[in-house]
Every structure is written in structure tokens, then in C-alpha cells.
Length: 560
Image 1 (spheres, rainbow, N blue to C red):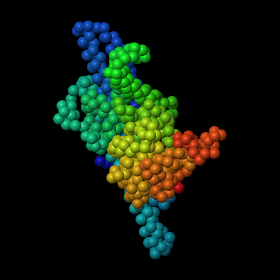
Image 2 (image 1 turned 120 degrees about the vertical axis):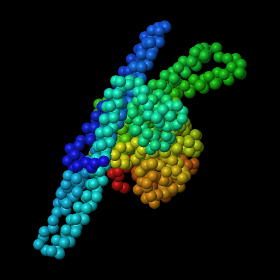
Image 3 (image 1 turned 180 degrees about the vertical axis):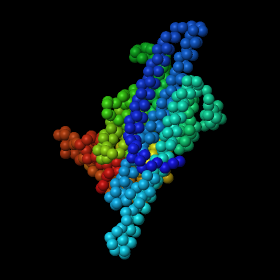
Image 4 (image 1 turned 60 degrees about the vertical axis):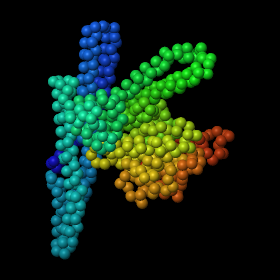
């Protein structure tokens, strides 16, 4: 693979590719929505048909939808390749920084990235010898920083070009093979049940990137929940998860209609049973109906949180959705971001409330952007575990124990699919969400993150920051990577540590502690009390200094 030249890098504008990627994603969403609308209308038209005409109509509609799916998958590949190219923005910024450093030191950079030192010419042989050694050493350091960047730029340029060419070729081939009949042997083995999709995120990412859009689409047809798998690019996860969200909503609607049809009188709250056996039947029926309505509320909230943003607002990517009350929505594409933050909510945070999580993610994104306007940041509202439904449930460890593997896999997936230079990954846990992070990074586990922030924590199941493990971080340096804050009026940190261990905002824990001061509760009867129940949710208010600090940590700009 060839090394990029200085002229090439100077002429690149990777941010344009990022804008183009977002535009392709949005256009593809509109195309997909349009094709689904056509499919619904076709279903309505052929509903009353009979015989050969009905069969032909159904087959034609199915073929059109199948071809549209392949086109959508190819467009996803194009969008992801453009996103890959946009990730070079950080690299170009580093190259420009080295250029400025070279100019300031009188060095000259050649097209191939070699750096020539200035010549010492003071007239004194001894002084010139000493100065020349210093100049040469500086040039060697600059060259050592620059050449790997140019090598990586050349590799990325070649890879992106190949991916774009393959995606365009796939689009063209759909004219002659609209159903994507040609199959990769590995995909055929999976479809035939002779092999399985890789579970490990890096292995899945490698497989996915090597497949054609038609093969990727075939795997989605085989597993409609494939978008939930950690290791798929964010653009692909969003594309397939939005399709699966429609399926999940339709299934739940059908289930609810079936339950209502079983006992229409009970739906109208009349003619209830008069025997113990029938009351038990009623109880089971009502429980199932409640669960189904909860699923529909989850899907409605997720759809609302994905609503097309206003002009200028960050695009949203659906990274997770399932029928067990889990979901995750990213603001901006995490695969191309220099900074990635994952917000983990606490007690009483069902998927139906993901809109609030997205709101906090937006506050964190704005704060990080203010801290560093030159770096692209993505913030994710991760509702990927069963949160304790109430304070009583939050006394138990099992929600954290059960949810920790999912958080670990999700974070590993973010690393596996990230483009270009490594991102700075931060995981933020609010309330019981911090307890979950403590389990995910403690007790023999290791979390794929550079920083963790514990906010309003009831304890994180370890007694010292050094007991946490972050991938690639020496635990002896955890104070620089583990952060905590607790509003003095927040009751949760005051009492929670009796159950889940030392408050991470306690100086003895060993984290870097920063201040928080939300608006106080202005009620005469409670004004003199040392606690304020509202303080527990005020950490993302724009007036709270804790929000600014969280943004600085995410952006790598925090200086205690």
C-alpha cells in the first residue's frame, strides 16, 4: 500500500465526506421508507385478489421489496465508506500540526514526508556542531511522527476507494442479478446452518466488511435482529435496526389485537369471571397484555427519539433495539468520531424513557463540542440492560451483574468498528448505571474505555479506583481516568454506599472528583434539609458546572 504524499493530504477535505455520508444515510432512509409505503399499498391492493393474479401480484411485490433491500444495503456500504474517509479529518489535523511545528523550527518537509533540518551556520565550528545535532534530532522526531500518519493515510485512501468501487459495482450488478443470487460460501454455510455468525465483535466486523451488500442483506433476512450484534458498523446497525423496529412493532400490534380479541368483554372491563380458575386466567391474560403494551410503548418512544432532527442537529443512529426492552441511540456516527461517550442510565429507566436519555446525551454532546470544537464527538444513550424498576430493586446487585457483559460487548464493538485513529472512549454512569460500570470494569472484567465517569453514584461494587480495569490503562494511573461527582444535596450517594460499596466521590476511593451544584429545591418545608431529591437528576442542566466538566473529560480537555 502506498504512502500518501503531503500534497494529497493538504488537498483533502475529509469533513466533506462526513457530510456526504450523513446525506446518503438520510436519502437511503427516505428511499427505504418510500419502498415500505409502496409495499403496504401493494398489500392492500392484492388483499382481495384470488387465483393466479393474486399469486403473481404478491410475488412481484416481494421481488420489488427484495431488490429495494439490496439497493438499500449497497447505499449503506457507500455511506459507511464515506464515513471511513471522513475519519481522516483527525489525521489531517495532526499532519497540519506537525507542519506548523516544522516551520517554527526551520525544518522543510518533502513530498514523501521526510523532514530536512535547517543548517547551523553561526561561524563557530563547535557551536554549529552542537546546534546541528539539536536541529537533526528535532527533524528526526518530526519525521518519526509524520511518516506513520502518511502511511495510514495512504492505506485508508486505498481502502475507501476499493470499498466505494465495490459498492458501486454491487449497485450496477443488481441490474443483472436483482435478487443477489450469487452467494459467498461463508454466508451460504451460515444460511444452511453449517456455520454461525462470529460472536466476537472484531471477527464479526472483519466478516461483514468483506461481504457484498446482497450477502449482508441475506444475513439480515436470516437474522432480522442482526443489527443488534456488536461488531457491525453504525450505519449498517441503524439501517437494519430501523427495519427490525418496524417488524417488532408490527408483531407487538398483532399480539395485542389477538389478546384483545380473546376476551373483548374484559378489554371493556365488564363480565369479569366468577371462579378462582377464571380469575387466574384473567390475571395471566392481563399480565401478557401489559407486557405487550409495554413493548409497544418502548417502540413508540424509540421511534419518537429517532425522529428526523431539525436542520443543523446531529444525525441519530439506532444501534440497538430488541423485544426485551433494550435500545441504544447515537448522536453522530461513533465510527468516525474522535471522542465517543456512552451514557448509562440508572434506576427507573425503561426503554420507553429513552427520550430523556437522548436529551442528556445531547447536553453532553453540546458540552463536549464547546470544550473542543475541532473534534467530532458522538454520544450514545445506552439503554442496553434491564434497569432496576424502583429504588427497592436498586438495592440488588443482579441488575448490574446481568447487564455488565452487554456493556462490555457494546464497548468492544465500538472499538472494533471505529475508523482511522483510535477514539477517546468515555463511559458515563448515572446512579445505578455507575454500579453497572463498576461491575463491568471490576471483579476480573475489563472495560474497553479510556475514561469512566460516575455521576450521583450509590457505589460501584469496588472499594478503590485501582480495582477497576480499563483496556490499555495501567491501574496505577486510574486516578487520571476514573472521575466522580456527587451533588452535596443528592440523597443517593449519601445512602447508596451502604449497599453497593464506597462512594466513588469519596476522596479515599481514588478517583478524580469534580464539583456539582444543581438548582436547589425552593420549598419552605424542605429548604433547610441537607438533601434535595431533585438534585439526583440535575447533573445535565446547563447551569450545573458538572455538565461542563463532563464535556471537558469527553473531549480530553479537562485539567483538574
